[in-house]
Length: 180
Image 1 (spheres, rainbow, N blue to C red):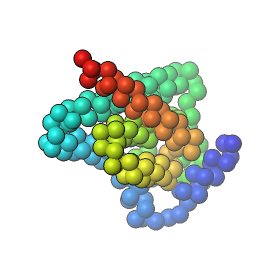
Image 2: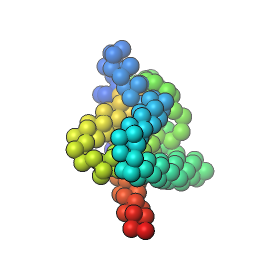
Image 3: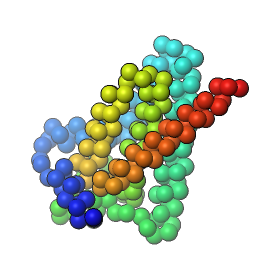
Image 4: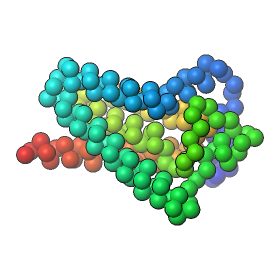
C-alpha cells in the first residue's frame, strides 16, 4: 500500500510547471487560508449579523476541535509515541520535491484538509447552495497537498473524515445552543 501511495504522490508531483507550483503553493499557504476564512466570516457578519454570529461560532468550534484532535492528540501524541509519519518529500527526497512551505510535522492526517472540510460543512449547512464550491475547494486542497509532496492519499482521506466529523460535531453543538 505504501508503495502505491508513493506512486500517486509522484504522479501529482513530477510535472514541472511554475504556474501549477504557484497555484498549489498559494492554495496551501496558511496565511492565505487564515485571510480567506476571516474574509468569509466578515462578509457573512456584515450581510447577516445573526447568521454570521452562528457561522463564526461554528468556524471557531471547528478550528478548536481540529487543533485539539488533529494537531494535539494525533500529531503531537504520535510524536511522543514515536509513530509520526514522514512527509513524502522527507521520505523520498530524491523522487519527490517539496513545493511551498516545507512542513516538518507528521504527514498524518492532513490538517489543511481536515480544517477546511470541517469549516465547509458549517458553511454549507447555513448556505446550502455553496455545496459545489465546497466540493471543488476540498478537491483543490487535496490536489495541492499531493502536488506539494506534503501528504499521501491516506493522509488526505483521514483529514477529510476528521474534518467531516469536526463539522458534524460543531453542527450538533450549534443546534443544542440554539435551543437555549
